[in-house]
Amino acid sequence: MRVVLDKENRFVTEDGKLDLKREFIYSGIKAAWCYKKGTATPEDIRATSEESLIRMGINTFLSDHGTPDEHDQISVEVTGIPKLLCMILNDEHQYTTCERSLRYTKVLPSEYISDLEVKKYNKWCNIYTSMFETQYKDWFLKVNQNDIKLAKKDMQKKAQENARNFVSILTPTSIAYSAPFYQWQKIATFLKDMIKNPRTPLEKLALPYAKDFIKQLLELKIVVTTKDAIEIYPPLKDDIKDNREWLYRNNKGIKLSLFASNNPFSGIHRPNEFSTVVNYNSEMSFSAFAQAQRHRTTDFECELLDEYRFVIPPIIKGTTYEKEYISDMMEVKKLYPQGQLIQVNLNSSLKNIINFMGQERACELAQQEIENWYVNQLLPDVVEGLSQKEAYQEEYKILTKQYLNRCRCAYPNYHCPRPCGHPRTTRPF
Image (tube, rainbow, N blue to C red; front, side, top):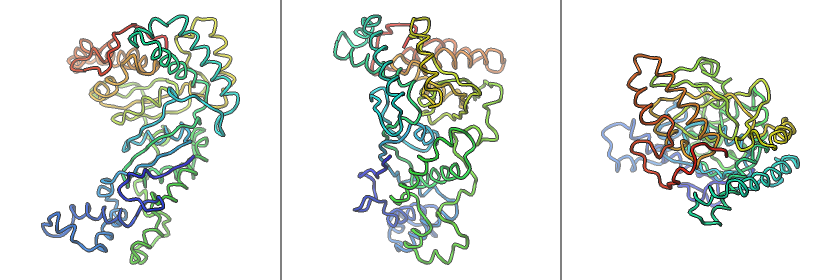
């Protein structure tokens, strides 16, 4: 795994590290808007001495007043990052990321992936492509306006999307990931806490990659150590009485949000609840969960099931390939394949479920499992739950009339950027 600072960041030194002095000056300018004495104008604030601005910037860490440090986005580019670590990062909401999808990337042998996974992946890529060619060619041509080249690319993409079920959640990918300066301190601290006290098999699986990630964040000066801060502002040495290694202290005791075991108030073992706020439990594969959690307006948690089970794509069910598929998935059981089912908890407002999840995932161009989960499971269950509550009959009527059993292009006020003409009503792949 390799982590580098995006060259377009605001404050980067010639050797590719974060310029912490300039970062704290910038934070100090923003902090001055909050508590500089007098009726300071922007010109007054920027005329403040460099030493005072640095001091104010550092004080935001010491006082847990992190807002001034959230104005500057720090962007990194990471290659060779395992999907599991992506899922951990993507469950923290204050970020933006562009992540290379395995829809578009062929799985190749690496230190993360065994020969067995690559063998199964290639085998099933070929099987899916053959099925598409013989059974669904007309559909692919219709979706791609009879362009044979585009149709073949689409088949390849769908084949890779389904074949990734056989490769581990440690499969490497690449991401561009941006988060506020202060948020990076939190992410690193949460990861450090997990390293010290891993509670679940997934946390233990992530340990070596989390350690490597933190190491590189420290090398790039993205995570601020007390030593770094004292070098920038020597009087700080007299102010810090404890033995803190990092300048940021997780005084609120927050932990990584991905793992339900970190949340004493988790709804993952509670009954589903439906109102204008929804608490919803279901099972889905790792790959579908990775799609769902990208909706930062929604809280997602997960945990492993007590027994190993996995998704079987509709295109495989009931065919001569089903037994072979099951057998092959059993062979990769110990590798945490992306097709493995996990327990997932969703907690969100009804508004955000419709406006954000629905208007992205209720689509035939989305991954089949996540579209099926949203259109045929989550929303019908929400509608059924609301139908039984007298106080929510208005919401029930709106959902039933305008959203139930529809793709997003049939939603009121939604305008599709890529109309497909609804070539099918049920999705086999």
